[in-house]
Length: 188
Image (cartoon, rainbow, N blue to C red):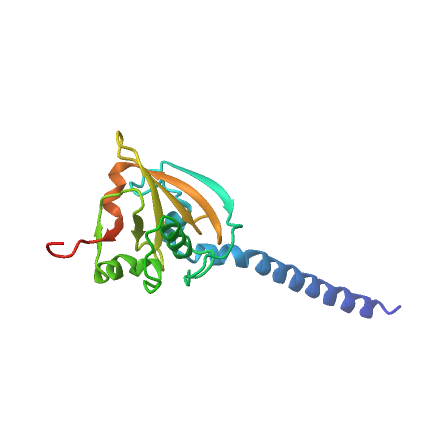
């Protein structure tokens, strides 16, 4: 075989190997680049990674994927926090409108619909924050009468359709809005 041909083939093979390795490196890096492109504040919010942040949960316990039936009348996007908050209010017998949009608009739309909104957690209230691109909502299941710590059931913090329970310190309530029942009408 011609030595010049062998040299040219080996040079070409090296180029192909380098191209294949570079392509594989980019493919492997894409998911990481996508996650980190969300920005530090969004990542901190989503993963509650800053334990010194006064808005972080004291504890979080994953409960797994929601495997129950589709919630009749729930028009919020399945698997998201809004779907879950609506479903739990409906189950409690206190349904909310299906017109509040993304989580970051819930508090203002609740006020416009006559609901009481403040910074005081209470069982059956909806916790709301505008953090992240679309905000977040969760259903308040309990408030500890002694410590003031409050617990929520939420969906889509740890992943689409993943339900978890998180407990927050009383001091963090000032960073969230809480949507309660409709405000009583004047004099009624």
